[in-house]
Amino acid sequence: MIRRGYFLITTLVALYILYACGAKTAGNDSDSKAGKRQYTEQQNPVDVMVLKQEPFKKELVNNGKLVALRKSGLQFKVSGQLEKIPVHNGDFIKAGELIAGLNPFTYQQQSGSAQIQLKSARLELQNILIGQGYNTLDSTKIPEAIYEMALIKSGYAEALQGLQTARYNLESTRLNAPFNGIVANIGKKQYDQVSTGETFCTLIDNNLFEVEFRIMENEMNDIRLNDKVQLIPFSGQSVFYGTVSEINPVIDENGLIKVKAQVQNTGPLMEGMNVKVLVEKEIPNQLVVPKSAVLLRQNQEVLFKYTHGTAFWTYVQTTAENSTSYSVIAHPDKGGTLEPGDTVIISGNLNLAHESVVVIR
Image: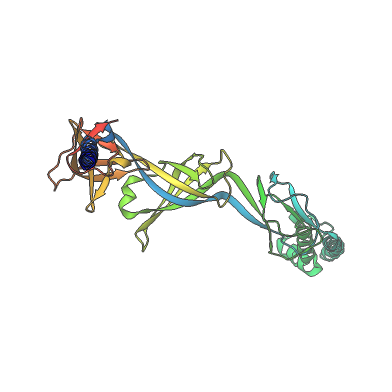
């Protein structure tokens, strides 16, 4: 009796274990099938746009450096000790205003001596002319040959030249601004010694700047005199507008053409500032797509056309570009088509394959 009860209990336990394992297996199979079904139903979300013909703004992008159209390194024409410097680097100064002055004492003495020498020579000139029978210094009443001889013999001509030189040197102890501008690069201090011909400072007219850049030989037809340009300083995102002022009619050894543009300073532009230069040219009747629409596959440019929930791989060629977009055509050797009215995928296309199932976001 006991043995029969033990057998019954063992049988029930075995049946329970078999049932539990079967249920777990069924559950795993169910989960696996649900996951597979869920994976199969997964779709690729994309953004799309409809192609149309429109003007395309082609951009030539270059880098350049601003140079003031009017800039001068100012020098003293005489040497001496700096007596005063009433301006500082960065100051704006008007034409004719004093930038710096040398101690004038030596040149004042020279000017005074030159005046005395001229007066002495004038008396000697008068004596010579009286000896020739002329009681006047009026050159119009004396024969030219006699008057010139008297000027030289008396030393009057030399003394007059010496006085003019002395006065010029005295005036040269003052360094004045030749035009309105910003003072820069002052490196001397009061009482420092200044040599003749040594650049004391730089004066910059910061109202008008010029930027020089270079374009490729195959871009020469895309730019003309007076074309509009955009200048964007590397230090910020402000945009300044200028015009092409010069195109050098020579192609250098690197196949580049030098171009200059002028820009009015309507903001914080500075001498030597690095800028990005954009030259735009409008091309009519183009198929324009964002750069994100065009991918490289097998070293070929492609985009995906959207048709009834499916992405179709289409080979294209980019004919022009700017900072955000491409102008595209169907690749002529690959058999594809691209026309106004086609719907193209512009995002979510990185992992797509030909005939991938997609859904518009």
